[in-house]
Length: 180
Image (cartoon, rainbow, N blue to C red):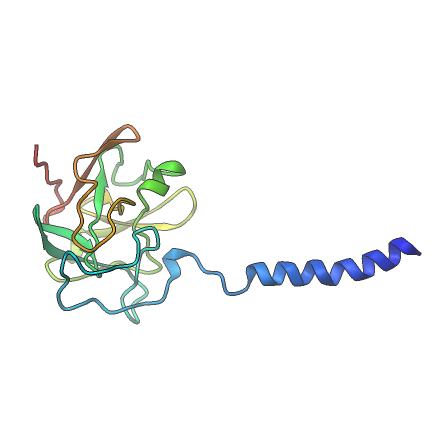
């Protein structure tokens, strides 16, 4: 009898706990849309890159744009946050997962990526990651943020050698900017 009473009382509590843990959660790639700013100053506050990306309003797709930085014209998200390529990747596969993806969060999308100012639409694409999220590509390069960039315009990951290859900012043509 005691077991039956305990089970009867425990099941609703477990169900309530599961519901509380699962309600209202969302992944970073499904965060609400926000519109791109008209201009982004490199020192402006921003949400950290570990919570990207913001999708274009109504499109479902992440916006990639071009902004001016200390390295010249570079690819960014719609909030002016710098994106990078990883030299170990191929056009059809991301080679950054686990600890790598914690340091270099992928630029993901919930719809077709959208071209922002200065971006060639035909260069945008996607690749499906091992975790089944969809990562934005440009000129055949999967795109990432760097966890060490905190504000729009930061390029702290430029030229880094980590996780077996180099990380570089991209120019509007989709080629790495190598300032060595």
